[in-house]
Length: 230
Image (cartoon, rainbow, N blue to C red):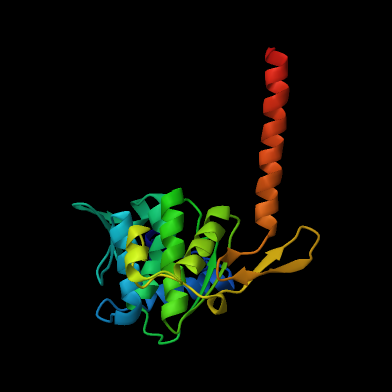
């Protein structure tokens, strides 16, 4: 999306051979270009609006250039000039709001990329709502422990009432059951381990073990450093 305007300019104004692209990139551009600003997916749009409200920006789809715009306060920013975090989230929000597919499938690689930790949590909450409260399916990869921690929060939240959710800072519709989640840890040696999912959160998983190892290494360096300092 960031390079769309440049790409179209090159295609229309030069006599060079067509620019080659991968099948996923071609499919992505085709899907985004087919979105119609006059069509609104009312059921899924509510999740896009949730994220926009929490993060303080709004997406806008136009027929005329610039087609993809992010509204930040009183500013209308073309997407190719927007901060990287907004650019990462924008395609998901556009699809949620304007997709005509009644049963969409979202395949998202590392939704945490370029996002502030709070934005990572909000994005996780949004995608969990999409998966649990609609007929859409969400597949994603992640290297971020914060996303898994938020999934654990949402599993616990499923047992709370509306007032308890509000006190915790969540919306009344938030919460997922173990049946809504399927999680796997891909080890470096190629072995794939299923992660147990309970009503009170996730079982032990590989990312958690990695962070524990990092914490232990930090503690060891800290101890040796203080010994040297006397």
